[in-house]
Length: 433
Image (cartoon, rainbow, N blue to C red; front, side, top):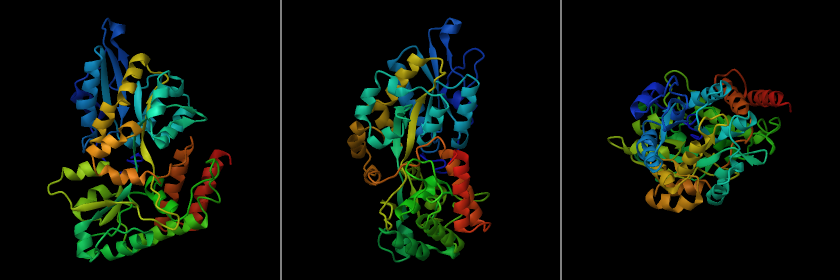
């Protein structure tokens, strides 16, 4: 989550049919690319699993899964084939819910951590805490990622990967502006953003990659704001409190001044931070570890630094991201699916994916991945104070209400206070608060 992703950033994806062809897997019988089938039904001993994800295809995530992790699993497990299908992040959840409702879900899915409560509440994913080998996962997992699998006291997923945001800053732009180092406080961040804005060069001092909670919450939390009560049942009095409103007002004011770029409001012609940063269009923005491998592939690569998110009056708080692995309640090949799930939790899989920006959710491999990938050190430090998005089946409603309200505020259709109050009331009315 890219995680939150996607929600994290704009990505290019292959169509699902192309993904299947590229992986050279066979859709057996009348089954489609998104369907799971067992060779046993047609006389074959081969079991074919379907695994859905939104892995990025521009920086090696999906390629590593397809060409490193899956082949290793298939070699160790003759008779099991894995059909890996990549969908756009924005489409994945609804495609999964539709497939589950039709009785033909994939065997496994890499789910945004924010989706797990919704999937669990709808009864479409397996209760993983009932599996006999789940205790070993609990022992190895980092506490934060493990907590994202929990709904009403039980786990319905496996912690797969984790991440958070840190501040990316362009050293060339900073030097040109006479700034020697990255900001460490929120006040410095905003002041530097103004100084780094150069309209003649079409350069914005700061990029904020959307109006969703993933991108905006760090600014709110670090300045003492909040989103809901601790039970996630009420937003009124929290989402629209004075600290949250002040944090949002500051971002809105900077956008009006031309300091924050087109990525904030989005829409036609908007440039994402990850796309604009290496081109010099953004001097600073926050992003996750996946961006490093993206930039390393560029010729020439940008000269940049990665620092902790600047501290506000409440501290330095970024958003816990990442993805969990869910096993479908209605999957066709549960024993094989469990084997693949366990393999994805293994040190081999975790470290292979860590090399392309997917930080391990397991404490047992954390030190090894930092040693192999030194830039993870900043993100590891940032994760110590990173905060979870509301862990509730209604998170999607909250995110939509907040994002819509902020877009209306930026468009001048509502004041900050009125927009946030409307979003809070809308969320509460939907959740029965």
